Image 1 (tube, rainbow, N blue to C red):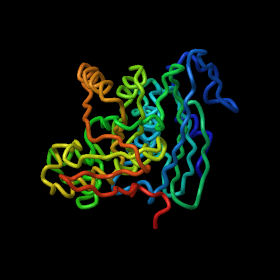
Image 2 (cartoon, rainbow, N blue to C red; image 1 turned 180 degrees about the vertical axis):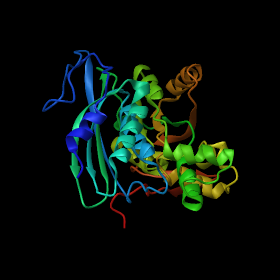
Image 3 (tube, rainbow, N blue to C red; image 1 turned 90 degrees about the horizontal axis):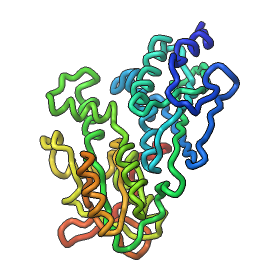
Length: 328
């Protein structure tokens, strides 16, 4: 029989990184002190085995890593700095304590660059599949938070990094299995799916720039996230198909397949946003100085809140069609 308290002791962090934490794991609740010049930012995501992940495409370490990375990406889209996280986990009997500890190590690895502290959570047993729910806490200086609702007609639509690589990596894992073998280029795509990198530094850059920026993270695909920006801002976004940045390791796949993954694949954890034309020019220069890739991929028009894909002289409505948690 699994010993819940022994498991909790084994995953409790040995050191605390955030000085604002007064009480962490070991009491009924965590206590931290918020800075008066900051706004607190909270988000939560749940991952369910066989719905959001499979054990033949992700190791326990990678499941843990990704479950926290999803939340950190949400914080990045708000311009926030990650601080703390809490984990609620429902563990089925087929998962060993060793595997669960490895899962938590994956979270700790993801948290390390940001000095995030694990400050609590809950551990229960279940006869169903593994369920991991992570709540993340961050903060952002007052007056700098980023929202989806700030796009205006005439704005540039931009994207950090490249997209489509996570979906390409999943395709390779589905074909070859967790251990491949993979070529060097394929390894890059597989790693992009298994351990995607949230764009926290880019979020900081945008939040502290002082410009009016609408922003969203690319977790469910460019098409889905662009539609969320359009709906929140009540404007039309036009994306130029030939400008969407694709990972060079995807070149062995057809152009049509690459674009499909970029638009609908998701889990790239890049940032898509809008800014005024002159503001974007300045943002590009700031991004170059910090080694951040920033690409113009479209523009904003007045009109109904939809997204259109421009291919040559033709335009077509780009439906949301991202990952649907309730799809059968």
